[in-house]
Image 1: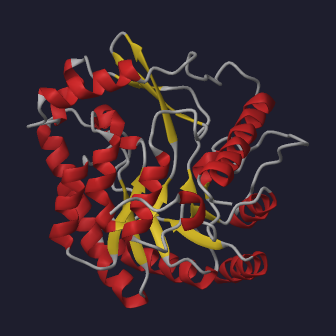
Image 2: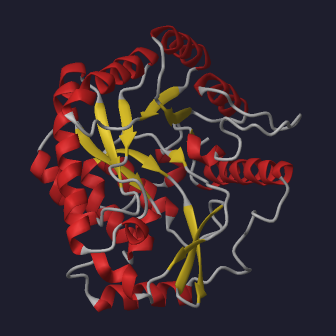
Length: 336
């Protein structure tokens, strides 16, 4: 089946914003007249509406019932969608807290909650196959604790490929859970860090898609492997129209959430022995393919860096990148 023309297919869609796109501005203590910090989800939603966003995906933590009602009222007034970002319970005694956060999320209007099941990047926090197996075991325990709550309240949980699960591992976990309430937040670029092909990751995970993190990626070689960075949409090497078309083909109501994180490039140290400590069975051809991809798609100039900027200039760069992404999504992807 050929891909539908993007501009017509998505004419009713607007791109939303993941809170991590505003990593500098979210709950910022910087005293900025032009870029004041967002103290909560209502502040974020107000601003995203002003710049043309269709919705937000935001952290759900310690919301009161009153705050959830205020957020719902704001969302309805602005005509925006809401997705949550939530932690799953690590033990049975934390299930009531999780359930209350699910209740508050639903009250505010969120039907989909994104989650992650690790505390960091696989190649940085795990150092043996046993550590990864323990991670997978604990993740399944947490998700099985969460599932009855999700089923009870009819809210979907979307696990992100967060530089922890390789795509086939995440599919295996979902098949073990076998729940209509647990699926995927499909991040367009994260899995490159695990020497996976970004389009193959989309094709593998898209049957389970509940939500998205839309991004474009830039790459560059460095001594111990390669550098990986979010860059404004259209400036990287990902086939965004094809990725978005695949997502809509499998889930016509999926929201497209921009995750444009303005930061220094991440080091992917795939030439170091310790990087490979957790990758049992990954063929050398995956590394070769990734290195070829990096060489063929080297960013036209050095990847952007922001750590040398003042706090105000970092805030400015962050806003500029997000606005540039919105322009591209409207003009090239039909996400107005």
